[in-house]
Image 1 (tube, rainbow, N blue to C red):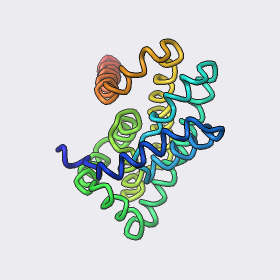
Image 2: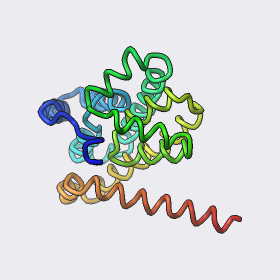
Image 3: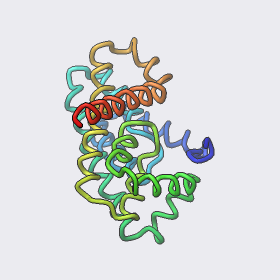
Image 4: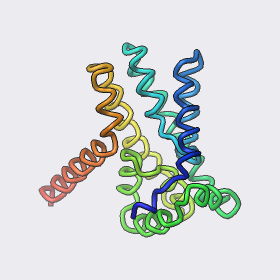
Length: 204
């Protein structure tokens, strides 16, 4: 399973360093938008890497920064969907091969046929490579409305929670978030999905 989401680490590190450097420029907001947009379809580094130092630098603008990140990411999901829908053989497969994600594509394709909305929401909120889900969503031609709604909820929840934590606790929590980000998002997602299941069960 670990190999399913294995990235070429040297390439990722260079992208990570490049992304961090944008937080020190006057174009940070634009960079955040485009990185969030690109990460949803082809870029390897999650926008949280840029969002965190930006909120630390300007804590009063946490809402604006989280909103920019969320909008960019959801619009990028549409690009990923379009790539999968129209250009999978030409572009989508190359993206999958670049990050060694064919195993993930096979798993995600099967999951979409079972629970498309939940699959997108989970990927949008957790560290699972979101680009896999957006591209495969187009490939298997799921409802575009489901993609937009699930992406909007999942991405906004993720980025706003991170921004709020940084706004409230500042640099004290930065290290904790960066170190345990994957674990925290997985735990929260499990709790959230569990809550949905409980509501559904009691509604019957």
